[in-house]
Length: 196
Length: 76
Image (tube, rainbow over all chains, first blue to last red; front, top):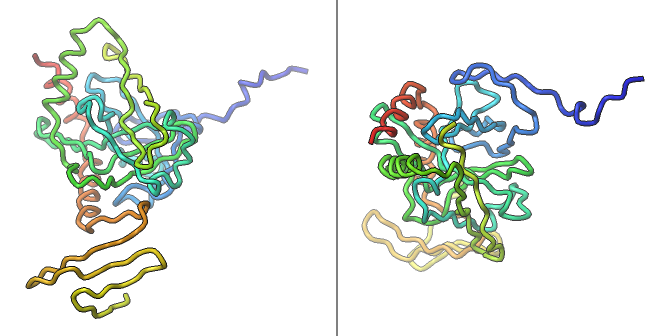
């Protein structure tokens, strides 16, 4: 009798068609459920993060249910180091976060044909619990945050200074804070290798 | 939709813990005061609309634009 090692009987890889990246092989455990969908896209609940590995540092939140739907996203700390997403207790509903360590924070980007006018939505970031694989677009209460924060220059500054650096990885401090505030430990993000 | 008429200074209670007060009436504008538990999310409706519009615009991002963006970002 041949015994199959345990790690071989993991879930089967699924193939998902996307208009931008062709057919992708996705591990079902990488699929994130947005039980409320995203604003304007309430019917789409399942997404996964695509890292095309290009120099822009932009990732994509790709729908598994509609091949055309993919949101360009980026970690806001990259272009706005002082950005803090203050979450209210109600924001945490459904995120199953036991600690902020598991929380990943992304801003959705709008990239028009005039690319230098790209903007990030700071008012309504996407928070993903990377352990439980659940996510939510959260509308922050802070009225000073813009849904259309132009950030091309900030991103460029970061990329230019980064690529002249020998360090291949850098760590970001998490930009999530709880309004209730008992979890104060900063989370660290690892940025991707820019040379990749 | 339930429609109620209120005068200046009068209020509406929702559940046991939310209270909306008419604070000021000036021409076509009404100022409302809202008392609610900290975890209640309160936003002007336009905020949601603006986010929806932004999301709709975001998914239109084109890979050729991203490629151009990559080139622009690399320029010194």
